[in-house]
Length: 312
Figure 1 (cartoon, rainbow, N blue to C red):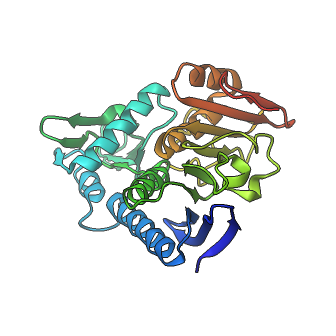
Figure 2: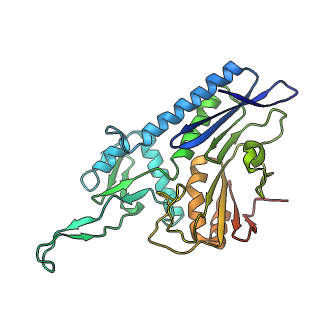
Figure 3: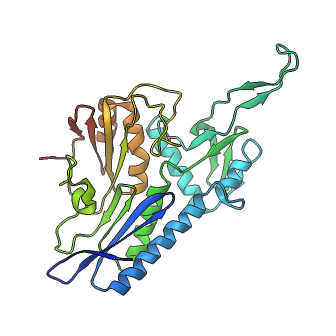
């Protein structure tokens, strides 16, 4: 069911619908003046998010990701252009973050049957995997996971990609302004009904008390990663699939990192790496990138921003 947030002088209204998608709470908002039209547009966005979830699923027997994973250490797998480009971008982010972002993981230890020192007893030997063990061929459009037992997952940036795709579909359908809130991560375009820019607080009223609530995020995405424990080895929904726990260094001085970028996919992918590498290194990295900003809050509630963010 649609909920009306506000009415402006030009008769435009913000229609919102909340529902659970991709294992998280989504809220899709569109600006318009026709409830039936808004309902249809939000349904289009939901359909696209469901399509992306199915596309990125590692559990469906016939999914591209499952086929790539099943052939790890065996052979390259030809895939479609959408999956190939998504993997290619993920590998580029891994390079950019020196492996702090990584879509690869290992399902289990590898059996090592060398019996020279163990009397024929099978021994579990750790197999290290990383994005460097993913081989892609642009000409053949193939993906090869070099190590048996190696897997890839888009748990870290899949919801961001789905939000980007939903926005794209909505814009094609004539939605000139809106917000997609995926578990607190925001993607906005256009302006509010009164032609004011979207801010963090107007895009998500539950965040009206955060220090950067009034930051203009129109036509931008904001993704936040929260440090829920003293050490980066803790795996929560934001760390799963993106942080390499073998580094294991403490990040207790950071409470949260919010990344502002032009796409939800990139913002989502960058939030946890910045959390893991620390305040100084994280801000240095963000300051080298175009069309990207960061707001970091430490465990004393002090706020640090990249060079292109101003907070009053």
